[in-house]
Image 1: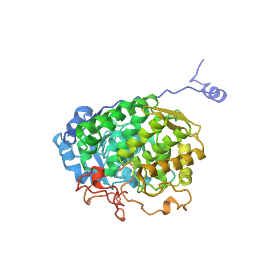
Image 2 (image 1 turned 60 degrees about the vertical axis):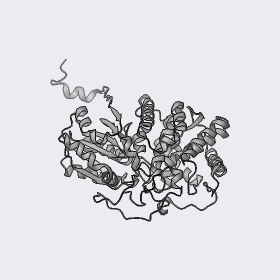
Image 3 (image 1 turned 30 degrees about the horizontal axis):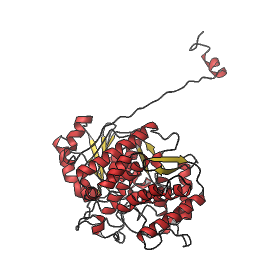
Image 4 (image 1 turned 90 degrees about the vertical axis):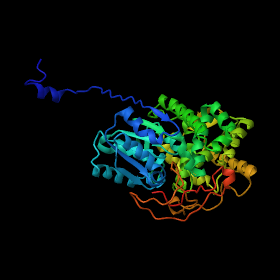
Amino acid sequence: MDPLGKNFGSAASSASYGFRVRATLECEYPVTFAPGLTGRFGRHLVDTLGTKRAIVLSDKRVMRLHGEPFLAGLKEVGLEPPTVVVPDGERSKSMASFAKLLDRLAELQCDRRTVLICFGGGVISDTGGFVASAYMRGIPYVNFSTSLLGQIDACVGGKVAVNSRFAKNMIGAFYHPKLVAGDPELLSTLAWRDFKSGLAEGIKVAIIGVPELFEFIEREQAAIRARDPVVMNHVIGVATEKKMDWINLDPYEVDLRRPLNFGHTLGHPIETEFGYKGIRHGEAVAIGMGVATCMALQKGMIDQAAAERIWDILQAYDLLGFSEPIRPDSVLEHVRYVKLIRGRELHFVLPLKVGEVVITPDVCDADIVHGFEHYDRVVHARLGGPKSVSVDAPMKAAADRPDRNGGNGAHGNGHAAGEPEVVLEPQPRARRTTDPTPRAARGEPKDSRAPEAGRQA
């Protein structure tokens, strides 16, 4: 027998050669939320990872509000990283931004050991994580989340992506950070719409499996509206830890059926229909949860009292209904791309009661339309005002829509602030609008300003 001798060529031509590859990568990383952590993060980063080289990715609003103490904390431990700043908002979560950021890392001579620090909300962690996954086939990154939506939802789980015109988060990867942190004190600078958008994700987690958290959010309405750092740290910590418990069961979404999709099966298509402008991610998810509750009630899966309790908590935080009509048939056009993302099968998450949901494929288009119509009746009965679901009005293509409400879109940062001075992709300014909800009802400080329209790249 001479496998590498004179008979090697003839053997190779006459026989197949096969073997199996086993490549596994288990990810483990610390998650820390603490009031006042912003200025101490540099020490935390170095003590945890031993970081020697870093680049900070952030947006112009976060840097205006919180950049000075954050960078000062890094400098105290010998880190003076260059900072790459993008415009705040959902349109920075695009392939154009992704490509420019890759180029910028190369210009800054970022190497395989440089840590990308994503300092911002969900747009920054989603986009920055995707950039980190692709640059040099993967560099380490960490998330320091500054928004409630980022802290509860986007900063953990390793799902990193940008949007396409077809669907939200359509282009991306599974790529986990090396460290996650956040400071609930920063939530005081969020506009009310962005704060309640983040809270919607916490309510979602509570409904699908943490009834104690649901009761806490019901009970602590005054403290939550006041953004008490200790109370908010509890909400964030419990919601994030429970989310990761579910994700750890299927970290790469092999079976494509997840309780965490509650509210998102319709929420993401609603965002796409709005062109990622004028509606926050949490607002869209709240609508999705409300409609799903109506669908469950119509199917006899949930009793009236439990459904009313879900609508009550959405109403308590101004998450019931929306200021502009939503066309169910238009949303259904975008649902088909959700089906592509989920392996051409659409499983709906429907509530059975607070703390328990069921995942079912037994949902047709008519069920969705009737769910929207039922939801509209619920909203109208509770809040009055114009219809929030339009069945007969003509539909414009999402690309032709005006910038409806303005604002900085889903997963944005939404921190109220003045004009920034550094941007990667300058964008035209659009008209400015405000949330019609009275400030007193929103629990918003008198000097708090909603983010301007058009300030999303």
